[in-house]
Length: 398
View 1: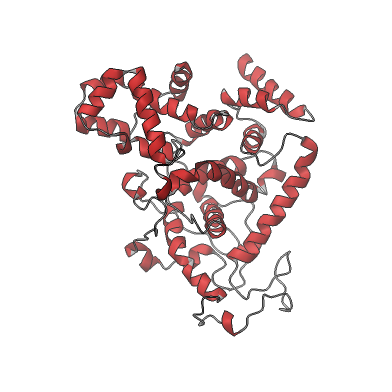
View 2: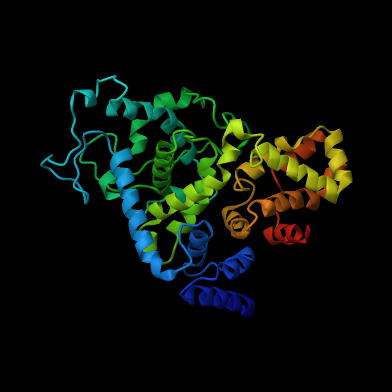
């Protein structure tokens, strides 16, 4: 208890400064953020570069970014021809986006807003599928948010404001969404979430997964070169959970916008993992897997040779570990603890490789005894473990 109080005091002292000492914040966050007040949400916002070190700039930054996000919803989520006045809906139609002939729903011209609206459904289909089964081991994402997006949930009968309404369920069950040229098309082969689907909320309410769906949809619209790739839902989920669980209600009310910008910042660092054409680049997934392989070879040649003789290549297990920052290998509270350390690592993802290497080394005896099939099972479904044991081991790897 005394240790916990001391750690809380450390964070209180850091955030009491007019200019936050980032090096100090990194050191303390690396050892885990206490689950009290807004410490974790604030630490992540700073470590991901959403907020700068000067406290005096925070309110302006947050106000500007949150207003910008609202604009994204207006322009990218609401159907063409909707009416709005910035606060909610206007009934006079004077401020509606002009719906000329090219914006008629039946228009097929390339510049038609409606044509874009229907084309969006290709990737919306995959997003909808993925967010409906996010973190099934906790009920959080199925629950209603206390702060639904008013201009979306009060649709006044207008179809298409709520993204899930655009997805036709009968298509959903049979569709196979292919990514064209970019991204990992078959990540579904190596994910292990249950196929459980969450239901959408009634008019006036929305579940947390529906909010996450909107974040991913806007991200894909703003990043057409990358779009949406399966697995991004597992990256945005923990960030949204942290922002939407912030005890400070004034921050929690803006969890969606804050999460969007933190997610975007993180994706700018790991986007190479998700772009197939960059697999061989220095920051690409193959390079990361080979770094893990080399570390394993240096730390324990016996395990390295054993896995090699079984032809159990790193892509069989570590592709998902690295690509999704271990978000599918451990329960959510453990993932948050792991991400505290990963986000505070200045040489971003060096420590992630050390954690992955530790996960293998900790299972040394079992791996050396096991045959190929048992080792695949062990590494693809990592056994329950105290996460602090893994992290302490990772720290010891010089």
